[in-house]
Image (cartoon, rainbow over all chains, first blue to last red; front, side, top):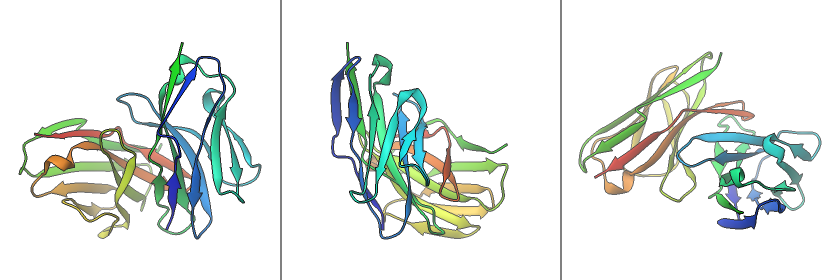
Length: 114
Length: 111
């Protein structure tokens, strides 16, 4: 079975500062990795995903993430955040078996302050 | 094109009343379908998934059930709602594990 741990429930940061949202996973099979963002009272939007190839993945809105297989991590980074980045961020893994279950972490609330 | 429909968008139901949420997809056949719930201030919890008609797998034992009467239809039900059933329910269609399409969600408030 897969599981996802997002180590920080809330990350406060000042505008234009860099940010890193941490994600670790465990799985007995190979997985695909995802980051989603949820703005208040809205659904989920895909930020980026890692399927294979280069371990550094670039997504929308200036976000990027790096897959580290040895540390089973997939941390999300942005070099300079904006007020509009305030939202809930979810890390997720999907199994490469026939169920293709997508398992989410508990989420990290990014709070960008002026 | 591939689309997923989920309704209703919001729902207020009294404790003990039944529930039926419907999800349908277009643009594919035999999709893998999933129901998730997000309680207030919490992450997304996988409730049920289905890899085909009549095939339902439950991830968490609870007051809910799911059915898949047709290839592109997935229904979430309850016979008697509890206060703890309140939350944001999302239907998803996951393509080969590499891509997920989500419905707009249903915000359920049990009063």
